[in-house]
Length: 492
Ligand SMILES: [Zn+2]
Image 1 (cartoon, rainbow, N blue to C red):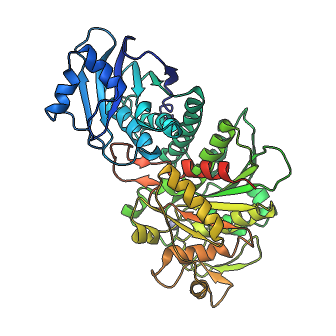
Image 2 (cartoon, rainbow, N blue to C red):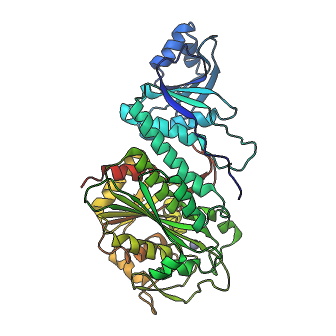
Image 3 (tube, rainbow, N blue to C red):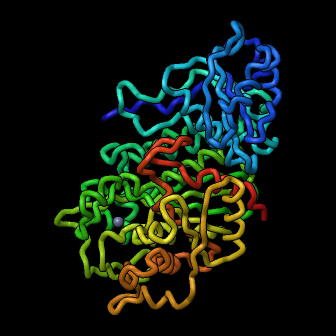
């Protein structure tokens, strides 16, 4: 099988001495206000006011995102100094994440041995781990099959002023974000339902996460007819992946559920090429579940959590499920298929039904579910829909701390009408295009019972067409950070 370049894993540690130790680059911050933080002030003192003059002349302005790479005039210590502009706004976790990530990406034009990141003095201590997460995130890219990659991660990244604990935490979360991104960036010939479960087995080997896989026979035995219907057109059969993290105790678990359509051709409601070209990303919800489970295991979170990935490939053949088909889902509810490209909710119908049998005390699902959510909120904001406002508020505040933008959409009863079918209990499309993100959530609500639940539509932010200074194009790993925080905060 095709082998991608490994996920970059630079050596990461703390450092106390940054000015005399030989290194390739010293990364330091500067706000728009312009006074030099201690690292830059020390360099300035050793160079007869060199940096102060550059600030006074307007060569370095501290504008948010401004990156100024300077050759050090000293013959000891760092050879280059990268001054990262931090702007005039809040010095929060998201700025820490983006500043470190942008810096690493700015330095990725050549192979560097040692990069020292000395940004911690500009941020409150509770944001220090986000520097480490950001730096690691900056190392991963979508060009995973280039023999001569254009972005090169440093061999070593050393953090000054960051505690060992923050380094460990930041690294655990950063590796988890990258794990999710890698699963999404792999092409569909590499990631299909069975190989996705094999990757999960490899990722969780030797961890506290136990892996259970339902193959085709088990799905038949369990009555997962909706998942099987979506996968029927593909030579690659569906799978259900269950990831259990047990922290001990008797409290009921949290459930994290992901849509894992490993390639979405649209089925008989075939997508045009422009709409199909990125459809390897239609398993981003499931990849997020894997990243989150990876993170909580590394962090040793004190919560019982079960992850569920509904995995299927939506293809075209003589066996494809058809428009007008009626499927009896695992729950017993019948669904009428009026568009085979609205397959994610069909896969999730059975996946959610399996999840609620474990009686979770709260459940979150993630899905690249609707183009309508992107019409409503754009490509950078995830949509939230819920049957429990307190739970939604908790998740929203976790996302707010991490700086991942989310916005809640309404779930008024009046939308229930829109998914009623004339033939079956419900249909898998709403009324035309209107309110399509919400009618999809209303469909899902039929399968969550009375479990407090938040549905997160990540169709926009999961996969990016273009690069930004802080991240490459392709998979973004969105919501991994927010979900880990939400789980950590979910005390009974
Ligand atoms: Zn689809």
